[in-house]
Image 1 (cartoon, one colour):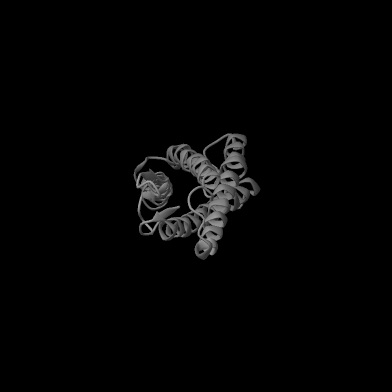
Image 2 (cartoon, helix red, strand yellow):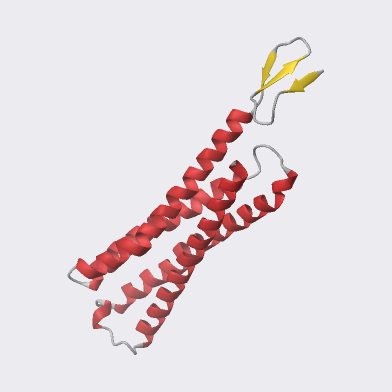
Amino acid sequence: MSTRIGDETSAIITASGVAATTHTFASRALEGLRLLLVALWLGGAVFFSFVVAPTAFAVLPTHELAGALVTRTIAFVNGGGFIISLLLLATAFFGKRDEARRAVRLVEVASLAIIAVACGVGHWIVAARMVALRASMGRPIDQIAIDDPMRVVFNSLHGYSVALMCAGVIAGIVALLAIARRRS
């Protein structure tokens, strides 16, 4: 026979009076690490979106240089988001099973899946097409007429890239709140 002392205790008192350690500390540490990872990615994505990209286009002498910087940086943000969201998805079902918070877990998993898809599509499809299109233009994008079909496609791809980043950030906020809710 054993008796649990409180919900948040890290020990179970057995019939012999010996304390047996449970996995409460490990599961709380894992949830804390998961919360940190999603917060780091989310902070990086927001910083990129509102600081790095606009600043690059505002201060660098050409849009070609700014585009190269932004392309390189967004590859890091998207790649990191993809890897982190897959890691968080893989660990989403570790820890205690709380039926009362089942809906929160489902929201978390859906949000992490959205981040993975948004970052994956943004990086391996949209950004890859933009890089290939810029290379095929043969000259800086600023020298391409605004109504040129290649420039129109490029601008459309840029719109998709922004939409995917917005979807990822919104999903990141939801995932952050869900992980924090489950942790409390």
